[in-house]
View 1: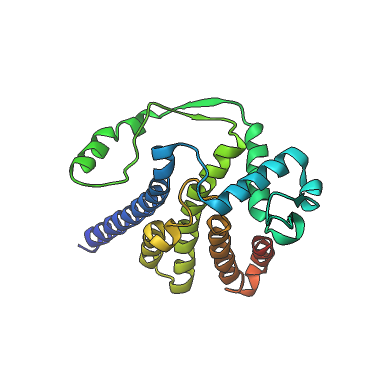
View 2: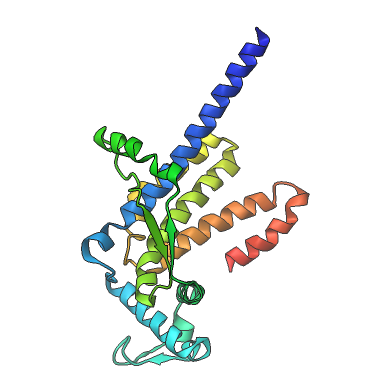
Length: 243
């Protein structure tokens, strides 16, 4: 009898873990899919005023390099005085965009065929969609990966980093509470909370899109680094994240 109860208990634990993993994955995909709405509706277009300046600054950094970027005096901003960019901007977002752009330039144009066991999930996804579930992934036959333009990367960075912010918020909640369920719920809430959504939709290339991810990651790493004296090495990563 005890052996049967142990087997049932382990099966129940496995099911709970599976549900938790599926909810986190669903939250991450929902965070990404919701933030893609402007791009699906209008294309790869930068929206609002500050994102346009940030994009123009990123184009200047890509064309002229970091040294000239930090000494750039922009006569088209703050008219009629102009603007010294190197001392009045937070360059981390532009530098992140260019780092992604440079990394993706080294990637060959590659097509990945979707594995057969993933394609077998199509009937399940269709059933859930008919049942009213939203923000479910569309399973394609293949996916492409390759270089992207600076404009496209700047448009896509808010959805990318908005998804990462949801993940780090979940990790932060787990580190504070030591409850997996709390981490799962925090991930789901961060994925859809309007205060973060409005600053991280596609094309909203502003500092908050990257800053929220960096803040959540820094807080999580800091808590991990002070957990025990043996975690001091994590403090080095925390310092880099803070920068």
